[in-house]
Length: 387
Image (cartoon, rainbow, N blue to C red; front, side):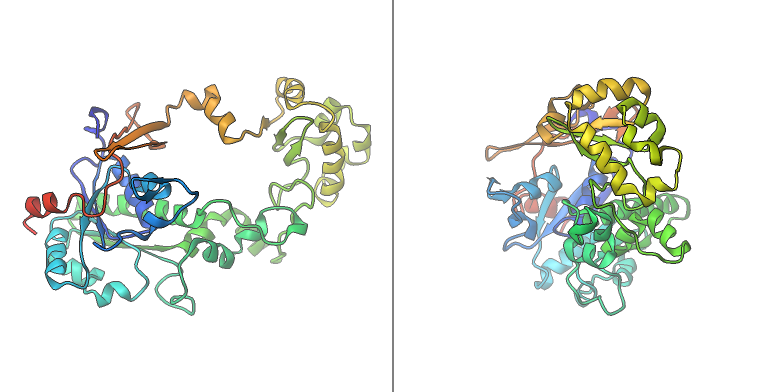
């Protein structure tokens, strides 16, 4: 931690993170970026399973890049949950904590004697957060709460890609990230209430609930327009419910995104007489969506992206070049945000990663500590808290 982080809003708050993989650790990462101290509870024999969840063949200090990205600057306490002495030590720590995060399968945490009611008895001020795959009841409770499987059950995949592609998953663990973000919102609200009443709370969400909420705009449309299923464009689709020209188009050298744009204005700028039958018939912008987009796509393919930006941007057409990661990283728009930081560890681990998306009083939190080794801080934590 650096001097920039000493006055963050959650400085002095103790978070005990018993979760693993992505959803819970993402929540504790966001709390840490706001100043909280995060103690990550891990099994002595292997730790968080995401230590071995590889996105590529890159390994840093014996762990995956994803583990480093989501657990930077946290402390690791090794606890054997099958050992009564270790469980007693954990309860002692929880009695002094402000927040607990767990994402065990429903029923497991209760068998450990660490469910909300049990922990509330030793620390009534604790904000206790639970994340599951599908909630605490119903036919899917025992199913694996994994991101791709939750996406599959959420309906989300039918909004992505072109109509002929079938269901298309996100290229990110979006259910995990959204559940983690929702958990942080609940935790912060519960902390505000605790500041008023002195009472803790039990915050619950799931991957499925977060994915349903993610779709609230389009799902509300579905629920109130005769429950018609969405039909994606079959050419350069970008949104199942929006009309032409909304989409991403190939130019002669790259790709160009077009957002909400009046068709007559675009037809004039692109000098497209072929759009005459549609330009003054707004209903056709949806019913003839594919035909219109193919006409636009053929024209845009004749010139470079920069050529079209020079034509469209001065006319206030909402458009943008589609950047890959290297183009993003080299852009001034990205550089000015100062979103990267290098975190390090004594065993020669050094990793370049992202920073918090939030600025507090004009400052973005910056940390210099890499993700911990399994149990790296066990001795110091046990001594500090008398475990």
